[in-house]
Image (cartoon, rainbow, N blue to C red):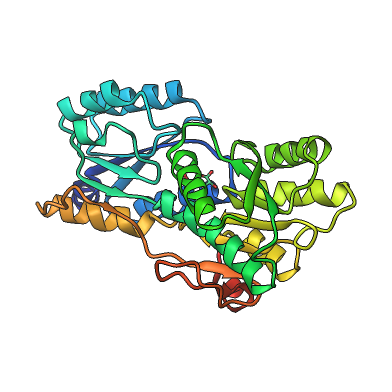
Length: 323
Ligand code: GYE
């Protein structure tokens, strides 16, 4: 009995780090991979306990979850916000409770008014810029660089960091390619179903769409179904550029139904574990927002999108992709 008490004592001595994660929801393949990466890494770490909350796309649920984490006295809070605005009050409460806050994925717009211990996220403006640059350069490569082409921008969840940043990058890059003409711009909410519905309605209301810029792959894949349903050929009649680089997008590119995807990694688990270990050891991680290095993928490779981003053949990496 004494041995058992000692073993339990040792085990509980290790189970002393409570890591809470306020996740947005489950809107896309990216999000599922992100949840699996972070939850798996935290749960897999000896002595760490995960407290997970899925807010189902509602800011009010995230605010409740954060307050609940404070009441429970967790040791670390991982946070990504469904939208950019409206977090200052609750994040200041996290600060007052002196719980180290790690920002991941979509940043809140009050970053400079709160304390945080580390920040890891995508470079959304650059991703949006790359999407349009890929289309502009690809058109040049097939001799259509001077032709006026109609572009539709399918945006993510309105007010989300990923939507705000990618739209900014999309529109800025349009100026560098004067042959691209914006003919439609609306939200598909980062889901496959809404991407399909929006494309269906565009195909009825917009005269002609030559290029679809979809701010995530799920919406691009939904749009592909709509395009097929209208008797058009995705990837040919309409050039389609997605974002995220999930496995389903690689499959669509290899099948010739989608043209390119800009990478935005969801795999933050290793970053989070490394950050927590360093914070426990007393290290200061600084205020800089860290962006993982990412690629561009298409059917043939070799399209130079600028800023060091040259596309790689999707077929060459498809087998390594887990999500
Ligand atoms: O691109 C999209 C997801 O915030 C980067 O959210 C993330 C975006 C991602 O739903 O697929």
